[in-house]
Image (cartoon, rainbow, N blue to C red; front, side, top):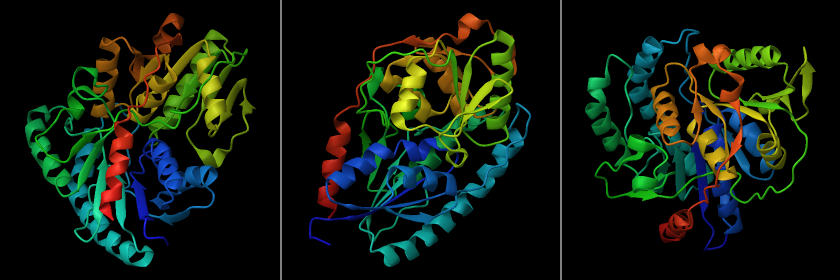
Length: 359
């Protein structure tokens, strides 16, 4: 290894593919700089990254397992997660120590995994949630969760916030400054930041982008298929599962595909007439980067997504529907329309340059 090369461990949270996919532009930049990248994560994330970067090292590193109910109210599952999270953070912290020695790691970049800090190396955490919104009836505890989150984030050398600061914020109150001095707003993170799409073609009339944990990912897929049948639309559902492949398959008149390469994904959504997406923040950043909008449907009970859907709807970026009301919406509510693409802010380049000082 040259004196200028760093061994950089990247480890995203495993609740869906979004935390891994938004790390793609970071991995690309690091590789261009000549650094060695090691990716740790769940099997779905590693499959996505290996398809994109077959030469980098990958390490299985499980996330806290989440089990949601089929109901809209997720209070009990969220409370169970909150009780286990501090202990899981501790497990992550000690698990990291073994990886640091084994792979001679110089820098750790965590995405929403609060236990991946260590005083012997430089550590960065990526998160847009400086404030975590508790579920009803615990909204009164939001100042407490803000204090706890601030404490966890203070252990890292830097906090990279994939958002714009001030009035241009996409995440609203979620990413408002919390008084820490290690915050860096790096602009939107998207694997589509360097893709220009000018071509048009007669693709699928309706495109659905699913993501997040089951069972609600599958429930969302099933409802979307019923909606396509209801309006007799030629529909493609992107399932958010790279193990299901990149070749569309037709089931009962609806097309399904596990995952799409960047160009095909961008072409599909930009040329759709109707677009329905899950409300994860990574999906939001992807669509805003592409300059595409449609109907956003938050995962039931996930307070962050519910807040984002309402906030972005009020700002005019997306339409908004709950999952329970999805079959009752008018076809016009699903319409895909073009907006001005949001350029990826060069503050990410500035944050990357600071990695050089970590040697």
